Image (tube, rainbow, N blue to C red; front, side, top):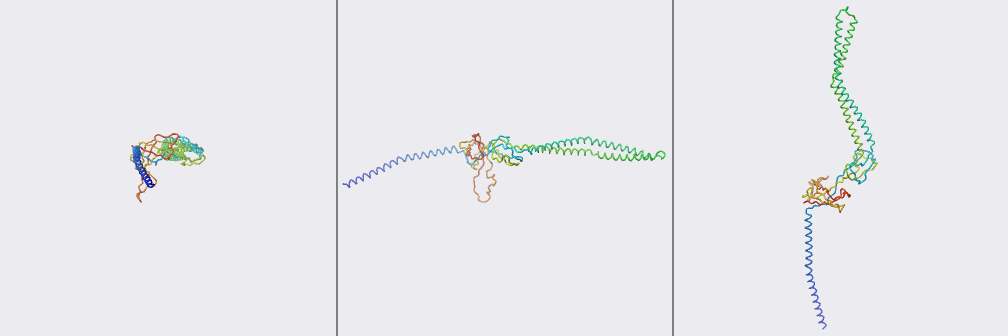
Length: 373
């Protein structure tokens, strides 16, 4: 009896186990379609999102190998001297023509005064030489005419003296005296001397043109000396003006390397002035520039300012990869060759989005995205 009850219990328990397994199997079948639907829905959403992303970005090319750049001018003095005034600080904004540094000008003032005195002396010498040319043009022809007249007069006196001398010797002794003979001889000698003197004066007065040209050459020398003095004066004025170092354009002071009291030399870098205009140089892969053209719109993200988005356009594409302009370009003709994708610099101008209160530094990283269609 007890054994029969135990068998019945086992049979009942077996039936319960079969019923439980059947329920689990039926429940699994009910859940499998739901799970399959969820998986399919997820896949469809992912595909739709991917297609939408591809459609939106298929014409956009971006790179993180990009940096801001701009014009920075190194400021250096034209003259040597001690810095007497330093009127700017680091990162200060300055305007074009603003006085930045004052160099001791006492030596240059003295040089300026000396140059002014030299030019006054040169002007006086040139004026005197010019006057001498005018006098020479009047005097030398007159002296030639006078010399010719004096020679003619001396020759006439010689002719008269010779005539008197011959007459004294042609008459008889009773018709003349020894005194008259001696007098005629002395007059003849004097006439000869006068002719010789007149001939000498004529010889000196004859080269009229060379004498005038000599005076003109002197005038030209004085004129050259005057021009040299004028050049020295201009140089002295420039040197004096260069004791004031001024800003060539608007911008920010950067890399200041000078203090008041320093002795600075010509060409020594004092600081740089960075212009407000900033642009982007993006190094795109050579495989990315096929559809890139000047004028295409660009969206720029700045790493330093995550909330700042700039808008610009492609200005130009460099005609050469960066490696072509490096100090040591690659030499691929020798050794084993490993192909490396080259990068081409692209200049991007910023059109809008800059905050005037937050200047964009040079050299910061940006991520430009070019829309190529």
